[in-house]
View: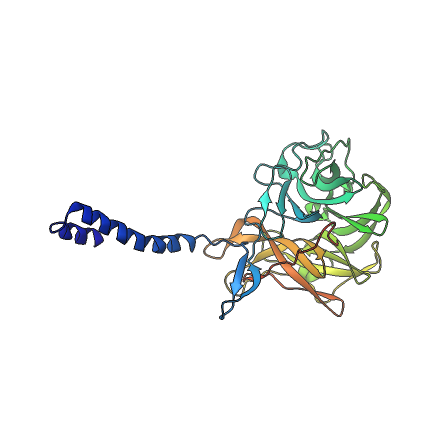
Length: 375
């Protein structure tokens, strides 16, 4: 319409005047075009400052997922002003690692573990569920990979002088491998005072056996285990299906909470529960209110299969990171497990996970937080 008006008007004015009119109209349209472009760029995981009706700035918010790509079984540490999250293989990497200064915006880094030990089956598809802890001046990673001799999943250990890697595994055999019980997966370290512990799962469901969550004490440098492993819990509750996995010990108010995932990771039955333990090595009793984090299938947007969690303390706030499946436009399950972040609150020393959330929520308070996260 604007072009036709200009063509008719140009019959009675000079061409220079037409050009001036074009410039004037263009200046009016440019802000409209820019508004259209920018409002189409909002993405989940972005931090958004909220305003009240009076126009004053309120608390900033974010929306899940915070990593909107395949990033399963996330673990996390803090190093200085940065947070590092580690995840199961994807995007051609053995171990994924991402870095953030606020727990909301994440930068994907290069492969944290580019080479596997010689005893392992090569190729990243068997490399799962890494978790990292700083011991002394080095970063120690525990992770799952396949032993070429027994052809089962086992746990190994790698070290680096930087949290982002490159981690190196110089071992000649697995750190832990319960081959007669289906193998060993999902290692998770825990520090309690001057002692270190490693939690893990025997992969019994892979051969039709019961699955247990175990703990074993680590040496002072974290590179070997000492003593014998102790069984903590197993899949004896109806909501757990064929397995329990992904153990994550957390200490709150002097009490020990063993968080874990259960049931089939591939569908909406996957969920998170916890057990209250008398010490880092048990005994443990599962909570009657389990599961405490489950799929949301009642209304769109659906949340499918939350699990593979890590609970951590950030100042006076408790948070949980975990994965959940992306969903297709029709609500069906997608093919990527993205990383989500939600608050954990406490009432009568019981954890209440405020999720899975799909709406904007307040960002974590990271101001003044340095050193190690409470794990």
